[in-house]
Length: 135
Image (cartoon, rainbow, N blue to C red; front, side):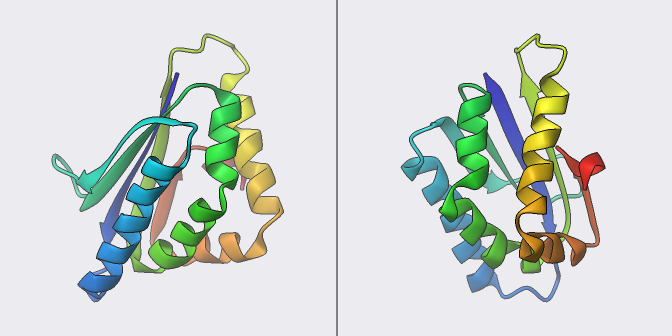
């Protein structure tokens, strides 16, 4: 099992209706993508972040499907311009010693194939977490 989590702070001037639209897209991803076992999208407490999301994925193949889903890319397009800072991370019970390298490769391949995504990430104040040391 992999729990992929994202935490983000929103830019002060981000229109609330745009934020709500991006959050609803994130909820749709959890509802509509059949590889998502469980999910939560909502307010984030206990730190500097405003909102967060967590998606439970069965295995690395489900993670790949999640990352490459067209709706995921739509979320990036709608949401990342509203984000000031973001962190993502993964928690897994998979004891494969190559697990981190496999996650990093998925992210690296996704960024290598989508220059527009790299531009969106470059517009963030900061981005740390899953696959970030590969970009």
